[in-house]
Length: 313
Ligand SMILES: [Zn+2]
Ligand SMILES: [Zn+2]
Image (cartoon, rainbow, N blue to C red):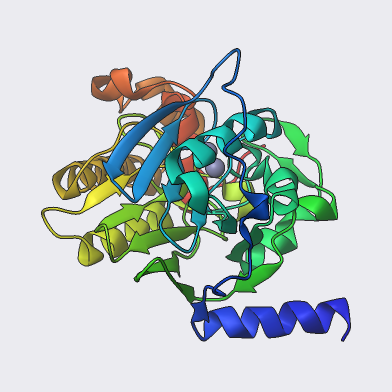
């Protein structure tokens, strides 16, 4: 079987609901003897006995554990790999075999440890466009620099188009594609056991989001991703953002309404014939100044402008 055929058949298998292969990972991969990091960068928050979140540099990691093993949602940077595996081992004990890593999208703060996680036994999976884009260099106009292609060791080996269901540890996790949101390859991951949703970077809680228009993202798609998650959530659903603290359905609704407000303020001004610079100079988001961080007011106005079809130099 060719490599491509293997990928295709694996993708087909996952698309049709994958069963975690019982006993496929023997316990020789157990890593409980891993030493505590001397210079820790990550902190752990417990959602339930079987779901934890790793905070620290890069995107928030979901750690789903149980008798079959561990599924990770995203894997931060390469420099965090050892510490991630240490926490996996601490959380999962004897059942720390890595089954899957789901990448919520292509960015390096969510996929940086893919090679190390593959080494540790994980199958990395993501939306089709994550694999397609990872092998391609592109100009990121938002930051005025090239994003260089990643080599094949980073690429997901199982990809899907709309959604994929993983059945493991007596529950189901569904990766659901949200089109043209933070990028064009985003997935949110819905845990139907612990009642939680990992939003990837479709949710930056309490801060202006990065909308990667150069990777196919859009403000309208960001709002639609919030709506998709809201439709799947109830009042006890735990909402895990890609960046920022854990929240609930009400917090997600607030974030959605803020994005709509930003979108509408830029849209009204654009439709009135204002230039991008005129909108920036007017400062229509001055009342949201506390949300500036990685992305400032100019940045989110520009991303919204571009999402509305506006050109930039
Ligand atoms: Zn991120
Ligand atoms: Zn991102």
